[in-house]
Image (cartoon, rainbow, N blue to C red):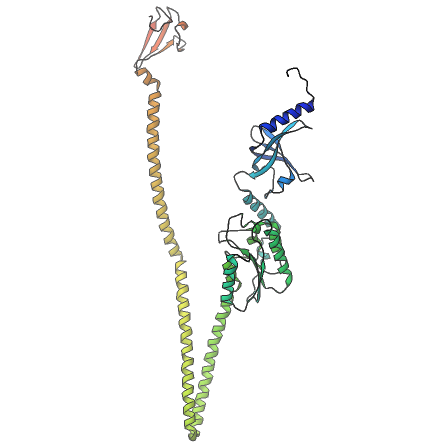
Length: 447
């Protein structure tokens, strides 16, 4: 319709329909700027790069699933559809999915929350509370079906059978996990009869452990009146809960060991006191025996009874003498075990292991460099051959020549460019000629 006259609204509607039909699903990479989030909860911003920009809108029903905080200057990749906002006559992208460029959304959300809570002081060492010397009742917040709970219960039962354990079952992954964990920590902290609280689960991916990176869980742990041990995942896994808790355990099993680890010190003290008591008793008993022997001399008529008593006394004395020997053998065996562990962790042993690893790395680097040089040499030889084949000198060597006008040195490509009587310079494979044009022809073989 070349002569049709459109209203502004009609033309805008046609343009919008054309754009939405042509670009129903596009991915756009750019930098966020001019971010606005009004009370409606919708996000309005501009995506830009070095050469252009486009307006974008991220409606609340889609942006509420965003795990990280959208900020100006953040490089992102957006997925959506192209549309036209009729009141301003501007085209825009309606974003349906957004992720940060170069870093995962979960990792970015983790770093943002970690930085914000650190500024508030939730990670300060001064907030950390010591664990009780020998707890009587321990609370555990974890999944009731996970292997982590079974491992912790086995260790606690083996080390301290009289320990009372209160288990608060919660989901440890999924959308409902974080609120459930926060509620469990709050309720157990309000009981007033717990000495320590373990919060954790077994290993998994970043997504599996994400409930322990939620702000609601971090603040519940920080507000808990009971010392909290965070035991999430494996030794290499770190969560926000680890930084807020009073103590981080590398694994759930390690958390169970930390809860009653101080009991070993108490057992060692008890063993020392037992030895001192046995020595004092033996000395006192020896005094009684000597006194009894003196009395025996004054009472010869009771010799048989005293013989039986003496035999019983010798038997008890032998048993008392054997007890320290057995205890010493146990201590010597434990000392040998710990000495072996200490030697394995000694700087010399670690340096030797590092030296062997460094040798293997050097060997691998040397082989990689040799292979790379070999490949580079082959590439260079191939490039050299191709350059020789494309060289103008190689063309001249096959009998061709280059003719230039004198004195402009312009290359002559057509006989009509020169006239009879003009001078031309001819470049050959070896040397050149200065010639005068006698005759010209448009046919290559007519002269």
